[in-house]
Amino acid sequence: MDATTSQASVPTAHARRYMVQLCKHFGHRVETRFDEATGEIVFDGGICRLGAGPVALDLQIESASTETRARLEGVIDSHLKRFAFREPDMAVTWRPAV
Image (cartoon, rainbow, N blue to C red):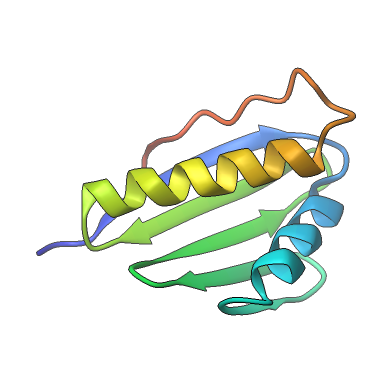
């Protein structure tokens, strides 16, 4: 089965903070790595790549199936919104990667 990829760019001034929180949180259960500007979370069935810029957190999910990709989008979305509770209007809009 071919890989399926989606991406989202989430406007926030706290991109690095959220990237680190996501990587550390999931790092208790799965393989993760991060540096000053990029991160990676290796889930069973897919991978999430993160990029922290000055005005946005860029996300990309790659998975073998659209069902798994959609599930991982939901997992990242819900955890990010939980960590960013001070930004209640935060929206994560996933779209097919180009």
